[in-house]
Length: 133
Image (cartoon, rainbow, N blue to C red; front, side, top):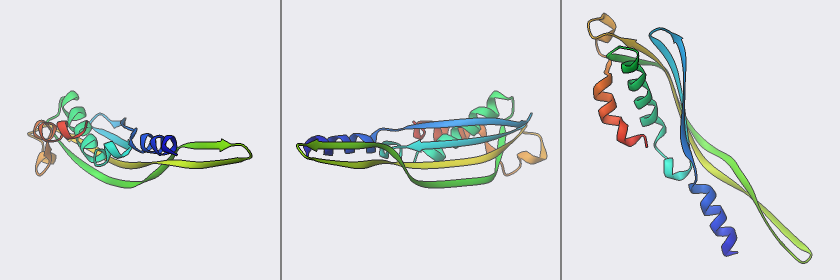
């Protein structure tokens, strides 16, 4: 029984944060982030903001705006744990907490009209970078 509890605990804590970026135009990208495991709870949004700031700076822009933002949370099957003995067997489904965040990022140079009321990429990176790990 102790072994089963440890396996369940390990499955619920193990996880990671993954971010995918898809270019849509020279100054527009779509960023999708998924964070799995309780250790990574609350990391999807900071990872998305960090990725948006990094993409903006890497492409030579200084400001960005988000559009069509999406957020979600739930769980996914992480595995199945089975135990058995003489004449009996038992199995349980191990689930892991999952969060997601996505947005379309439009980037601007500081002197462009779209930069007004936009996120400053350098400031955003400084604010969120430590929270995304």
